[in-house]
Amino acid sequence: MVREVDDDFEAALDPLTTQAFSKKPEERDAKAIADDRKAVVEELEMFTRAMRGDYLVGSLSAADFALYTLVALLWRVELKLPDLHANAMLTPQLAQWKARIEALPYFDKTIPPHWRKA
Image (cartoon, rainbow, N blue to C red; front, side, top):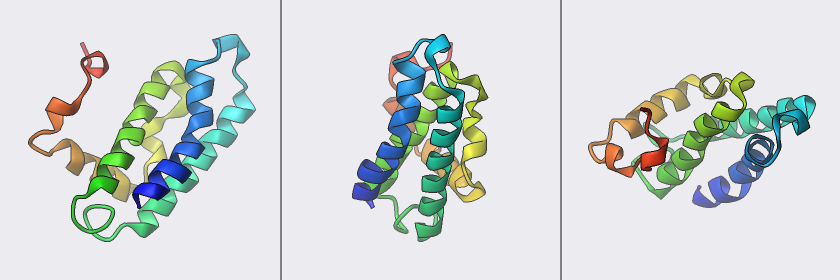
């Protein structure tokens, strides 16, 4: 599952991060962003179908941490692409999964300082 995250989900997400962080607003391609968003949603739907309980493989694992990191990146991308609607990209199951990850007692210690809201 970690390989799926690292290979497939990251590959789907990379074009969106390129649009958000490597291009000036006037250089961004709205059609490409829409197509890239669709590819990310399809990957997230695949992870939903593959889930085996509260976490990706049943119990909390490296796969959850790998996926969460990239899912969290969607909210950073949304800062540059406000029409992305990152929350709407998650299935209800993944939204609940995200909330479970964020409720872990050590979660707050993992957030980079520059990602914290003021």
